[in-house]
Each structure stands twice: as structure tokens, then as C-alpha cells.
Amino acid sequence: MIAATAIAVSVFVAFQVASELMDGQLRDATEHQLRADSRVLATDAERAGLAQLRLPPYSGSGRLVRVILPDGSTRTPAGQPALPPVSKRAGRVAQGASNDLMESSDSDEDGYLIYTLRAGDGAVQVARAADDSPINQFGFGMFVIGLLCVVGGALVGRTVARTGLAPIDRLTAAAVRVAHTRNLDADIPDEGGGEIQRLIQAINDMLAALRDSRRAQRLLAEDAAHELKTPLTSLRLNIELLVRLDRRGTLDTALSAESRTRLLNDLGAQVAELSTLAAELTDLARGDVSDESAELLDVADVVLAATTQARSRVPDIEVALDVTSVWVSGRPAALQRAVLNLIDNAAKWSPADQPVQVRLRAEGTSALLEVDDAGPGIDDADVPRVFDRFYRADSARALPGSGLGLSIVQRVVYAHGGRATVGRSARGGALLRVDLPAAAPPALISRLTAGEDTAAR
Image 1 (cartoon, rainbow, N blue to C red):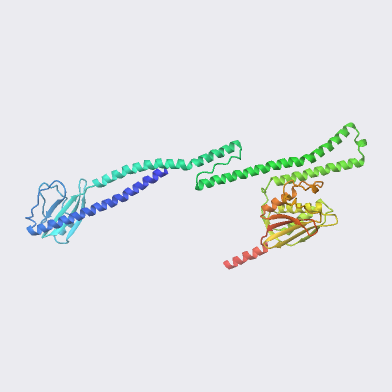
Image 2 (cartoon, rainbow, N blue to C red; image 1 turned 90 degrees about the vertical axis):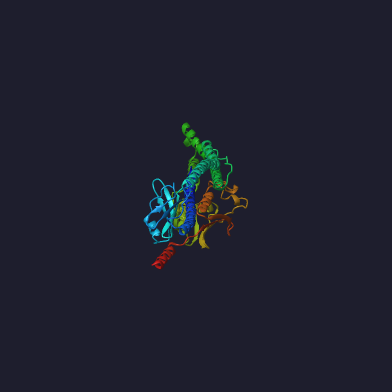
């Protein structure tokens, strides 16, 4: 419809322009012929006189002539159709007020183009009937051609539209099939070109991202089930033992006070481990989705808050702080959780008489946070997998933890545009480094804003 309408408008405009041009050309040619015929007739009239000029009988078509005598009367050939009365302007030409006059006479029945030329004491007139038949024939031809063009344009436009939108139809069908079958492994064939090809590529990239997300969810669920199995099994066995002894009435005699205390402490530790694991799984499963908004904050405050929280959880932990004020744009709670995980990880390995060292400083355009311990360090074989979920080195399997802490650190740091790495500290233990993009302090921003306002004023 758009193609047909565009062609119809184009044909209409072309017809109007061509009609005007054709009408102008025909009028110019007619005026030129009238002037030439008038000059011949005026020459004959000056030779023979206006009254004696011989006017041949009207031939039935072609030009019409008339002689205007000095007294205002007229002569016309025999059998010639009557011309419109002599106009006042033509009369002034016959009286010598001007030399010639080209005028058109339009009436309800006939229209004439009349040229008046001064001759002797009067004037001669040569006229031709206005003929619109060439314009009408041209208009009819243009109408037929335009109608054919509109019909052809509509058919071609429909064909082009169907051909061009065929990949979109197939893309829609593929999207509907994916929505119904939940099968994300079926890539859409890359066909077409230009915008359609980019659209198909974008949807295939989206499907690939969804496949990766589903695979990550499945692996998370499998790993979580595997990690939950051991503490749940131990917890279930201990509870079943207590229930069985209680039913037999031998709880006080079968277990000594020391054994009961150890068993209850074991149950408490397992419940705490399950709670920590559930919290870490929840935090990890949420990914980058968070209601917490980013704000300008001092990383030193975050490190101090995380250190206080770590000390409240493990009272005998010793943390040596060497921090300076460095500002970043980030989410406070998420960053505090990441720093807490780093301190907890270092506390598990650091000997009781060796503190966990936490350093924070600005380095170039980054905020550099380092946490190291005096433990045995990380084996080279374990370094590539330190930040993997649920990964625990062989030497760490006897220690409490779920293997999710450093994975959460990497996710938080990555979400803030930073980078987390692992190395060996000068004390022989592990050195975990976090680089975050630094931001200008609020005081500097205020001074810059004030300077801009002053310059504007």
C-alpha cells in the first residue's frame, strides 16, 4: 500500500508538471504561428487596403481572420464562425494606441487565442480556437500508465515486502518455538542482510547468554546439593542418635556429659555452617541483581566496618590495618561483604600469633586493597581455581567453609569494574589483591562544581 500510494502520488505530480509544460509549449507555438500569419496578412492589407483586402472563404478549420476597419467595423471571410466582439484593447490597437496585442477569449462554448496587429489605418486579427485535445489525450495516457504503475508497484511492493520480511517470519516462528519448548540450544539460522542479519545475530547472542545462565544455574544447583549433602547427613545422623537414645531412655547413661557437650557443639557448628552456606548461596544466586544503589563512598570506611564485623564473629582474630582514604563509586553492603570474605579467608590460614594484614591505598587511578596472611600460601596448581565456586584445595577441606567466599568476592569486584587476583605475600602466605576504579572525593567534586558555577556567572 505504501509503494502503491507513493507511485500514485509521483504519477499525479509528474502529470501536473508535464501538463503545465506541455500546455506552455503548445501556447508558445500557437502564439508564434499567429504572429507569423498576422504579419503576412498585415502586409497584404497595406498593399491592397483594408477595405479591398481579399479574404478567401473559410476552409472549415485552422486559423480565423478578421479585419478591423478605421470606423470600427469588421470584415470576416465568408462562412467563418463568428469571433468574439472586438475588445476595447484590440480597438485601441486599431486606433494606433499600440502596435499589437495577444489575448485569449474564453467563453462557455468556445475559447480563442487572438492576436491583433496594427495595419494601415486599422488592424488585422488572426485567431485560433483553443484546442485541449492534446492535453486531454496526454492526461488519459498518463492516467492509464499511472494506473498500471500503481498496480505494478503494489504487486512489486507486496513481493518485495514478503521476501524481505520472510526472515522476520521465520525469526518469529523460531522465537515462538523456543518459548513453547524452552529449548535454548536451537540457534536461528543466520540469513538475510543488514538490519535483519544483525537482529538475528543479537537474538542468537541472547540465546547463548540464556544458555550460559541456565547452565550456571544448573551447576549451582548441583554444586549446592553436593555441598549440602555432607552437613545435612552429619546433622541427620547426630539428631537420629539423640532421638534413638532418648526413646530408649538411655540418653543420660549412653553419653557422658563430655560426649553430649561435644555432640551439641557439633550440631551447633553444623547448623551455623548450613546457615552460612544458605546465605552465601542466596547471595551468589542473585548475581548482580541488587536493590542497593551505587553511591560515592570511602573504601577505608568499608574496610573498617568489615574488620569490626569480622572481630565480632571471631573474637580472637587479629587484624593489622594500614588504610588510607580512597573514594570509589559502589554499593557499600556488597563491598563490605567482599572485604569480610577476604578477611575471613585469611583468618582461617593465618597462625594465631600472626595478624591478618589489610592494606588500602591509591595507586594511579585505582583503589588497591591487599589482604595477606602468614599461612602456607596457595599452591600454584590451585591458583587458577581459587575464585571458582565451591572449589576448596585439598589442604582446606578439613577447615570450615563452603568454597563460596572468594567466588562472591570476584563477582562483587567484577560488578564494580575491578579485578581480583591472588599471589604470595612476603610472609609466605596468600596475598589477595583487589583493584577498583577510583573516584574523585566529594570535596574535590564540590570545588570543581563551585568553580564551574563561578566561571558561568
